[in-house]
Length: 164
Image (tube, rainbow, N blue to C red):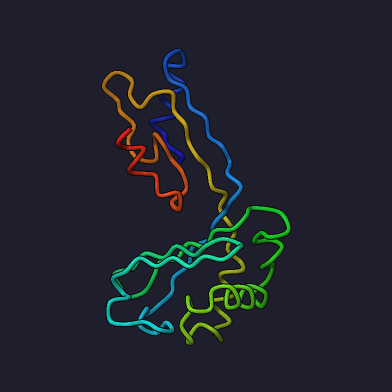
């Protein structure tokens, strides 16, 4: 998202290369869920699967980690009445909110782990941004991946943009 090469192209070739970044209405926080096998309803394949939990507030997008856990991204609105700030201002409210809306996403070992919830509450949400470039190459320099077309992961459009 913060490509140095893209910035250099915009500064060096302003007549042929322009880009724009748009702040999206969502933000995200990431966290680790250890031992997928401890999740309610888990079977022996869960530690190799991509998991998604949705609620009316957002989603948890959780690919597997090499340690048998999940690397989870929680997305919600960045501000407003249904955002991280309003719904989860402290560790206690984080635990209550996430366990209510995503009850099968957390192993029982985390439900009473105050340190986990305190760390989640203290982490600042990152605002999501999309990047739009007027072109993906200038001379012998080509932008690939997020340098040329960043968007938030849950849109699932990264490969589509790359192919276009």
